[in-house]
Image (cartoon, rainbow, N blue to C red):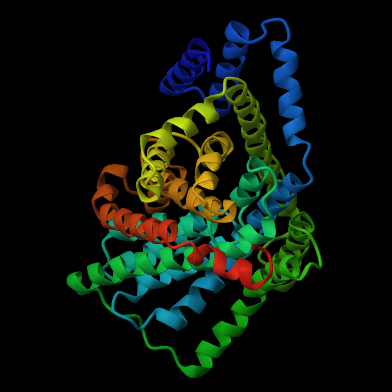
Length: 434
């Protein structure tokens, strides 16, 4: 490992981030500077361009724009309201029921759309005012919405798990999708435990009683939305189509649901939805391309191998090494967006954990759970900003009710880290893992 090249890469990246340069440009510029100074100044720009183009030339990545478009259609298609109504039927009568409803609805919405930001905006926009009307503290409601929205990154379909599949060298997307269910549910239940204790102590009211007839109606209204999970994941696991093909089917299904059945999206609104989806896709793909180029430079500088040998030399205790990796990833998540973090740190830590006997599927779930916590933390937590904006509050006011929810997410992370079967039992059952 050439120390000068590593210092240029790390310091330039951190300085650019501190100056407020967008992360994709920070990654790209620091990669180019490192190559210019310490690798090959003549072929720098050609090499970086080739690495970016080659990295994006992946059939699996085609799923991302389709899932983004499906998420946009869901967000505007009245699906969130129907999922909230269904969640109220299931949990609304419990003490602090609206907090439980928020969490369960966010889990449903995240699982269907695959987007934590979409879940935070859609569920928070509807549930925030309702919780405030019922006497809930606005900042507590925002904290619940922010943390629960991240479950959609663990429960499939999840774009970030597709990115991890690319970064890991081809771990099965189907296996990753199935592996996310139990950990995602554990996170949701952990958040519910904290929300329940908080609501009981504050004596928040229970929801209004819903008749059997009304409950069945809300269930029937929600079934078409929930069917998407079965169609997409069931089709992938059964081998009827790949994750990329499933993403296209998800777009078709959500189009029919939002435009034809629910009639919440008008044909005249489709161009705007397509433009928004294209804009989001462009940002994500630029991040992926720049991160792949940086990963190549890091591999050229032998950074992953050096970190692996140093960690393994530090201790041979598996529990300690996994704890150190978790703490590093938690710190990374506070200042780096999820997509580049997965692409940059997967090749660094995957060799370490596989040397310890950890399954790459299991590590993918642990990695995403770690970085999901970062989405709820300052200074760059996108879900934190969206949740505060939707609730019309500030980060300073939300931090206090967020702290016990952070703790719940961390405990869930440790459970999944040290109990591999929580991630692997379903992939093994469906024959997707050894």
